[in-house]
Image (cartoon, rainbow, N blue to C red; front, side, top):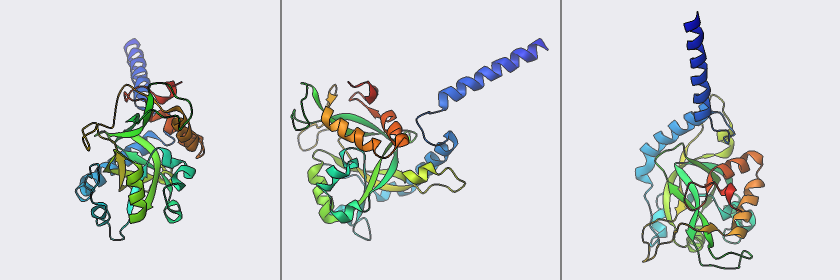
Length: 255
């Protein structure tokens, strides 16, 4: 009887620590739903990635991108300043803005390591506050970031490429936010999009990332406020999936 009691106790402790280890309190859906989405994202990535090539900065052939799609429009996953619709409207057409949908991307880490020249455009800054948002691709598809998708034509794509200086365009699997929240019996629809990513390697004889640097405070506040405008669960996930330039320190620790 004593042995059985101890065994039960140890089993309970093991279950407790397993739940604590694998449960992610920042997710607005269940762990089981996360597993289903990641498995589906893996399947879609394996089947379709060959049809979605990388385009390194400077992107010389915008038409080559558009030719990948029958309707000559490309789906862009955005995760930074374009979440602010006022900021997006300075670059994108009204037609493109109508396609704006909240989404989640798989296999990425959001970091403030895109190094930009020191500027007071966003308000007072300290010497090392030159970091804007970037993504690191990660083979672990459990690494997710929330953002939005926008479908753009040739003119809008050209404007975006001009805006996103130093960024490659790379494929990434995504799901609509509302479908991610729906943990019903149907599998969520995962599909491929392209996203802007600044490489750590040389592009156009320059390196556009740097660490350690701190976020540009006014810019970071704008993106955070935009995330907050989509509700508490969305903001909570944005905070949990956003890091300083080292890719490990949570953005929440930035003062």
